Length: 453
Image (cartoon, rainbow, N blue to C red; front, side, top):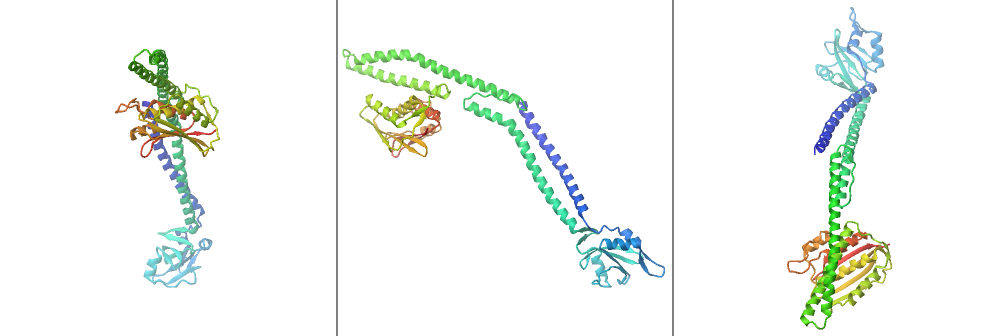
């Protein structure tokens, strides 16, 4: 299984690579968002040193600003002022009229890092006093770093973009990795399903899991050959038993009909004949069931009238010498006009087995009711009796198609086995469903649903 270990190691390394790729892409996206926001920003990108150097105090005490400083401040919609040691404005350039001309130490402490009114401010030491540069009201200032509304909106938009890009990238990588694993594992799962259904499997022996595919192919071939051998063995045994069984039935029948033999001998011969007939029927059912299971029995589909088949089987069963302790009734709603696409011989065998099942498992007698109806595009065939029913354990196995392998119950009576298994196989071959249940207070019921043609 080294190939399987390599397969999962590869996808572990692939996951690590995805995490690293995810980290690098995020660094690139964050850097790109910051650059985008910086380019979109219209914040006053003012060099305080240049502004400082452009404002000078002359020898006579007059404070003047050069043309570059004035143009720069006005271009950036900014203003400036200088406060003397008393907190009074001793010089200003485009200072808003609503601002006071004198400030206390507390005011200076506040706007040195925040605002004067609604104006974000920078504060810088100057030989003439304290230089204060104010920005337009829609700018944001924190710790001497300016952000305007365009910068903030661009940053928020970029953050949303990064989050969305992360989610899309995660989804893409997840789907990509899942798809790769699915492509590698799906053929194996399909092959296992084919093997479990008894079908041949041929997986491509290439790719990352080629060794596993190869082993599944070998296992499928081995199981198929084994099952075919078993089917051929059952068919061969059935064929070999027919000849000696025919002699037994023939001689038993002659002994039963011989008036010169004692009555007890004729009765014993009749018992041998009846049990031999059961054995021949069992062998026939076993052979047919095996052929249906391995698709060796062709299903000759044609449009057939299921109601007519039911009538024929009931008449034949009664005329074959049905014991008086058994009765068979037929019920129909007279609306069952649809035909079924099916094999007449197989459908006859199905119904014979259902009626025979009620007879065999109720040696004290019972009433058997057969009902044929039509509903929602299907033909419903119900066979029920008022006999002893079956155990809950056996019923569960029947409905799970896990038919008991025991031919007899603990009481010595025959168990529900090959006959009902053949019913299941025939219904399955006709794309129908079958359900087994007990009746209250006692009895057994089988419901068969077949699609109409």
